[in-house]
Length: 79
Image (cartoon, rainbow, N blue to C red; front, side):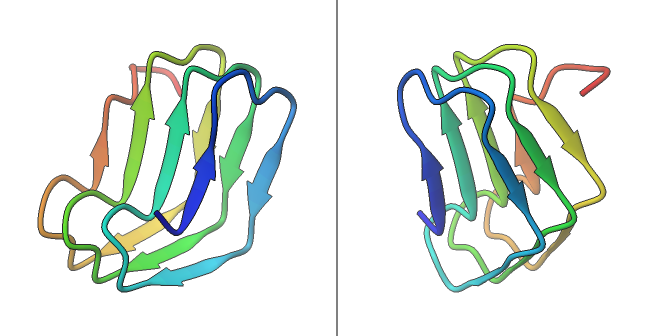
């Protein structure tokens, strides 16, 4: 992963990063109340942003290009 918010990460802001050439760009796992904004994610082998078992996260204004899987996976409507 380029950036991984691990179990129970809370109130973290991931902003303004450029991530290239990883498996997943940003992975948010079992975490709450985080913000992922304004990041540029390029050339992932799988997904650009993955949200897994997490709630109340804000995912806004990220640029995702050339990923082998989904640009964004597991992001509920309204994030």
